Image (cartoon, rainbow, N blue to C red):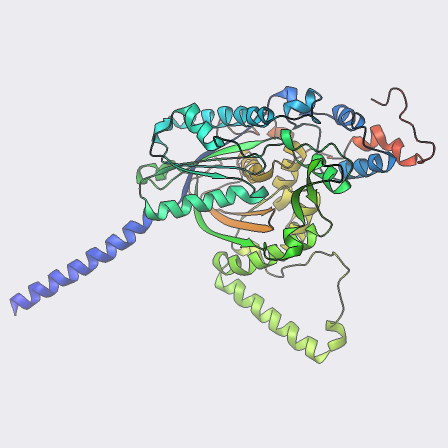
Length: 476
């Protein structure tokens, strides 16, 4: 009897040990953000109203209609006067870019951002186990990842991923790669470098759908340190809770709405089609269908289902009321309260319309969309890195408390919608990181007005006629 009791005790102990080991091993697969560093280019690359006018003026391919289009686009863009452009634009060489222009632009970013990040965390480049680099519109030989490894003299066994062509949602794809690596390898440190090369891709033609990219995209980038090391958990800022990636590349309309191509004169540019909002909405809705049950409480999901059921019953009773159509292009409301599971919304700064559309769909307040709106105003659309400027704004404003959840939403060519949720694992309201890109100007935001000065300076173009239009002396 005693022997059986002993065997039973041993078996039970072994079972408990295996369960504990299983639970414990899962902790090693968690993905934490240790720190991040957004890139702030030097002031000599700042784009003012005056300089924007000079860039437009020296494009000899533009006529009155293009001037009017650009004025309208710039005024309604939500972008301010302190964004940054690549150096070749300031040198007047945007029509004659070289490969070196793109490489130099990227070197300036990663030498600054990665260097500051590693120094602040007192981490040697040789400690980095995984390196993921995403720059969509620049492919070099050797790769940008190899250039970073060479510059920082990283280990020969570092796991390397170099992504191109992934668009504005690429940084979350990079996070997803790191997350999956962490599932197989414990006690690792990963570095993500996310940016976009604008220099060699500046469009100098007159196709309206391609000119628009020059108005929206600006220079920037971010370096992010992620880990699943137990020893670094207490130093971490965020923990990844879930991620969902949606790809509509199989849909021809979605695939072609946002694409790098040549115009009729053979000038390469980034084409933004009129059906882009429609493609973005489809991808966003499909993404929400998957991630919503993962991030919201059961009570809110049940409330929404009940509300939906009542609505369907009413529609059956009164079909004429249910058949009313929304105006074409009108944003659709999700009809569910995301604030029951999310405290902060980190929205991709794809443009004023993107921010407003997501804000309307998720029924967000001005407070919720303020970080994205202010990031667009101060830094513009920095492509894949824009989410991290928005996150940095939240941190600089001391909004991020321990236990808060941050919902990141991004869109990209292909067409893609990627989203994820981060949990704040330590109180970030106590002390903002010394490397925060907003530190020198956060007290000025939000400003009383973000009205655009372009209309005041160049608004006279709207009153011009095609037959009599002539650029006057002193236009600049």
